[in-house]
Length: 550
Image (cartoon, rainbow, N blue to C red; front, side, top):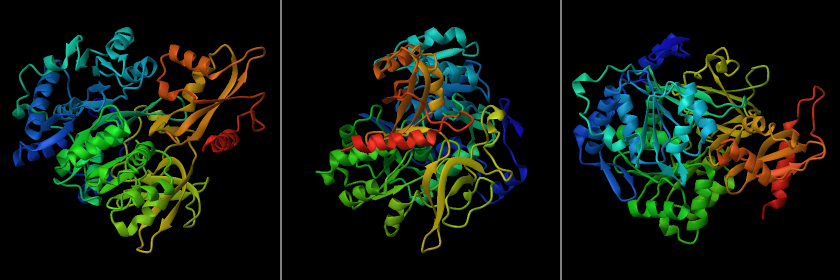
């Protein structure tokens, strides 16, 4: 461990860091250097598109300098945390660049989160400033923060984007820009992002990434998929998730492409974005692709500009990839694999001759990413055998915000336990691929969003009618997975799904985390120690889903 700027305790191995630098996987630069070079190259070239708004490189650079000046005037220093709970708006990308100009740490928070999650995250990472919409999707974010303000002594400023508030975006950009000659020297090995992910322990955990690692994975994707200035990327994934952040904040600067953002997902609107902007690249969780092909199935010309679509974040069936490839033969569709901690662990495929592997595997593991498949004792499994997936590489996160959360998540060689089961597959060309076969961690992935069953269970144990509850993943055609709650009611009490939803709503939990299926039981399956056998419940939930699916 070592202490980084801002007092963050990060996992650090000096020899590994030396090797990554020596071999060029880690560059001695940050996103600011890439952005400055792109502006010098062509300041009038479009960088981001959102609806009718087109932002050029020069405009983005100048607005980021103004926001960076605001950060300094408000007393923020390198290592301070700036949170944002914004939709896929252009302002989020400007904020991300300005923060890196000042050496600040960004903390993206999904807009779907409500008071319970928001208060925890802001306090946990000691955020000094947060950017929010005034109202988004009928939810008043400013009112929510006003209620929480007393619980957040570290929070100095609330900046409202596209609305009125204590401070507004326009006011933040109204002052003098940061003098480029006064930009702080930012260490690429410093923490640049804390992004929270749900885990098996209930409360979300802060995942720390440094400039080096984030930059490496952007370059790796860009090189593997030949992203360049001729590409226009349609990015429906939220910028508060790792995928959206890569493609909205970094890829346009690093590879010279431009990105098209959409703040509220609807398949018809997504198709319109792709058509209107002749988008060549897209990606996202299973529901995005499923809904796109459902709508565009009878009009294959609608996506004729696409050349590749990467799909991950939750279960991706081979049939879905094959169906998409059959309807849109001009494009390459494939599965990818990764997590917030180990970003883009695989890079799918890069050529049409690998199409079968794109459907049947979760992607190629390309050096310098390393993978091990191990048994319960940590011993490497024979090729083709199922085991736990461990990975490491230059894009691996540098630990959780609380060092104790790292316990048990790494082996002695620095490999991260992905929480999934899988097997390695070697292609005819000798490349290594991974096939995900199951999950060790008890996580529900709903539309690419991690939901911790324990977090919801812990809340439901406060329901007066519930004696015991166990929540597991249930397959869903619409969202990939959804929560299925097995509930043992208290004696003499009854329970139904509307009452569960009303209870969680009063507690301020995001609606996307609510169980969507309820099974009332007389008892729960257990091991001799009394622990609930969730593997049995998962099988039951899957059987229920299979009966209900057309």
